[in-house]
Length: 252
Ligand SMILES: O=C[C@H](O)COP(=O)(O)O
Image: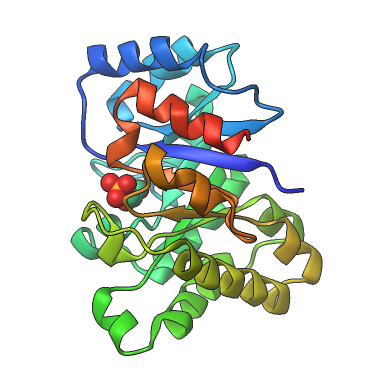
């Protein structure tokens, strides 16, 4: 039985005081870690304060991106070593906004995924198709290529520990959710790709999230699908009460 993982991706929102208030409220209300994992993916400047505030609770703090090198002349970048040193546990990699707006490629996502594991960080690897790709029936091939490249060079245990978030780009922040059947169909395909490319065991263990206009009203239906093990949530994760409701759904 795969444990559900609910991650709130705040993107570039909130000020530090608001972020701290969120964690203060959410940290005692989220489900016990044994029942479901609750993760908040916060902007870099908030990470030290939020890790400190969440210490000793079931709430995990994640970053939304990182560089793949340990250190060096990369002005403006943040390394996996820095995140690990702060007490961050997870990192979102290859979000479609990073791919579309900041030239992230399958290759850099792979380098970052390997770097995350080298530093003991769990990657939340994002994949997803555009509306055009869906309409041209290219979804499955596109997702397959993204997944295979992201996992290249990982050990079987690392793949088992990975989280892959399926986020159809046309459903992000648009209010358009993929139907639970559409979301599950792609997640089932991702699991099959992992089974073929890595191993049956890795395919059964890897956790798959759906992301794209998830909210308390539709989360139960999505999480009831056979291959969906969690959600990566943007807008509806910005309010603590809403995030707690989503996390509770993961524990049902
Ligand atoms: O990382 C989260 C996704 O981009 C989904 O965002 P959304 O829930 O606002 O559609």
